Image (tube, rainbow, N blue to C red):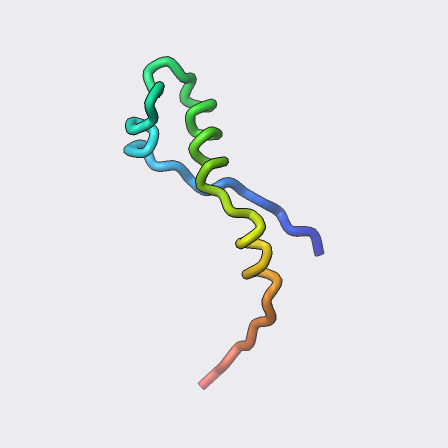
Length: 56
């Protein structure tokens, strides 16, 4: 089953802390921070682990 990858959401406070936030278009700033925060290999590893459902 293919894994659909999404970038994490970026908080406005993180955007305001970006060094060149006043000269970057908002979309580019969001994509930049989201790419820095993403860890796709770790997420794929966790999602690939077996799971067990326990019902009490």
